[in-house]
Image (cartoon, rainbow, N blue to C red; front, side):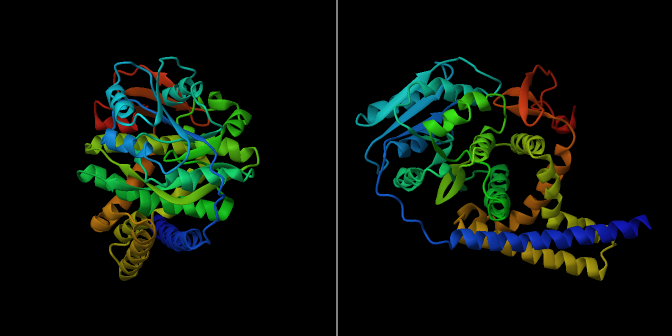
Length: 397
């Protein structure tokens, strides 16, 4: 009786997952085939804010792209919390190599809350010269037309924030590859479905363009100071004020550093637990997106019956079709294209991470251990049994 009920439940969940995969294709088609908006010819001055914590993989090349924008007037503000930060000499070299660029480096250890990245941004804010502000993660690389494609969208006062999808451009090693392919074949399809069904009420750290006025309206960076998912909250708070959050059709690139499997797992667990606390109902609903893993479970419980194997095969076909169309065809992800056969393994791993994320509320971020409380806020804890010390810590506390 119990086994039969489980088979029925799993079959229903797999069917729902396949419907979700098809919905992803529809959502992506609507996004990528939409008529390109005519951007305003007005190009107001803008400030790029890049908070740093150590020199990223390919740091100089990443930062140099921001210094070569095809844009009439803009400023770049880098920020670190420690003068000994390894990113400091990289920024100093940029200042020397690009003397015509308006580049500033802010070094300040002040903290306004638990999220030290947000504290860094707050410390940088006093040096910002322009009303248009573009916050970007330090491991992102962009083309020369990035600012020109992003900032003018804000000329429409109904738009409160502009964000960008992203793809991996470099992922050395197995762990980096398995993490990278999840971006365009798993995460972004969900983003596009959310956009189609309920609108965009979040932002992605790859690019967050807004204005000083909109930032002040939500209470500035102080409103984000204790949240782990500061990018999500920035978009969410601006959307809550009645402004549109728009996903640009510009796709930026992310350079993954060589990493170990457990480092990749810590990063994935941090994101998963943060999302679980920020959007518990939506996160629980993700169970209906893990078709590959659920179909495998169903085949196992069904002792590889003919029906379960046909369902598994159909699920893999639909899943792989969705991943290829969105990740490779529309988002142009070369890493996914080269490692496409790893996608089922990535699906199973994502399901395992989803299951583990329901146990425990501690995460490691930049060498510090935090406990996620409330609706996604964090509190630093002193834990001798940090997640870095053993894999079992993923399910601790």
